Image (cartoon, rainbow, N blue to C red; front, side):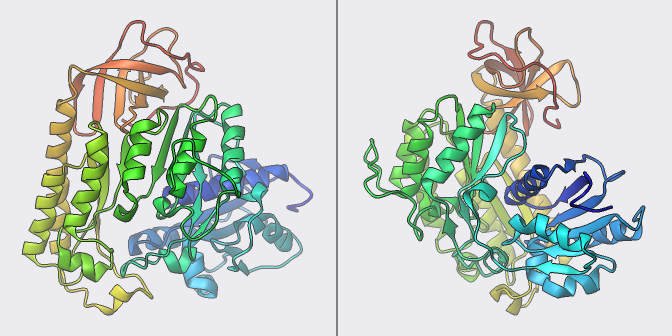
Length: 470
């Protein structure tokens, strides 16, 4: 079946971060322009794509396993199986040795070439690979599927930080920021299509505009902001119909007074920052090449909370980094308790090829890594219970995302601080509604309550679609 001559059903399995989710959306959108159709299932799909992640060894193992299953269970000879993303960029041609029967491999810098790749396969080529870094056009960078309630918007690609454990600079390249006007045009188009919330994406999003000019000459911030990212937030708040702006992922060096002022002074910017800590030990942070001490990290959080009393801070933590002692792990536990995170992702260290940390002895036993992982998760559950219990009896603003997956009679959504809220269905409230909810009960990860009568500030689009997995 020819790619260029027939409509194809495309299924994409995505592993990894929000950047990968956004990349998968771009691929589907670019293929849709050719008339091809996205499929939610593998069955009946003509093209099966796995968008891969290389941040941890486990993520690569999952992707390799999935690709192996897809090639082994290929329904018909015409079914095409391909890999895209970070693992392709790292493994290059060797991915074809790991996955027998793989038809194509596309790196992180060439996603806009997906249609060309499929055309080459139609012409009879196999084992097609492209890991070059192609220049994106505004159209390919801004490609979205049919708009929903929320959308990811990439503002910065790559990373210059060179953390010793991280493979991102190798697979994503150096930092390149998109022009501000291009981003503004993309967001206006999304909002015109019904989007009410955007999340600005970048491996180190607060570095936006620091290495690449992003503003046209003569642009002046009405509030006097000098830093590129607060200026971008300010400009996006002028987009009529946009209710909420989120961003991820952040680095403490970007948590400046200007950023704190932007979050507190711009109504659409949500009071939530995801700020990876990784370790509570200064020695381990130095080995990681994170570029800050635990004291400097606390100062960064303090600047944000000083201006925003309701600020929610979430984080990433790595346990079992080479040479991490029991005492240093306990430093991390103390830091988590003292800083008071709302939530965290905890990861067991795994060495990544080509990183500086790979040269260090991976000397923390796997059983000890698992113990530390579980200990931190227990601590975070206790903290989550305490934080959420403090919200019982208060009202929170919720952007409704849909019915709860566990109980279709209830609605679910998120607060400005990114907390999941479940509440009883009310007439007139649907997807996209902004409503105030009285919190009546709290669990570590979820709040439960009732919509406050007369608090609906905007009607929704009915109950079609799915809500949060609760």
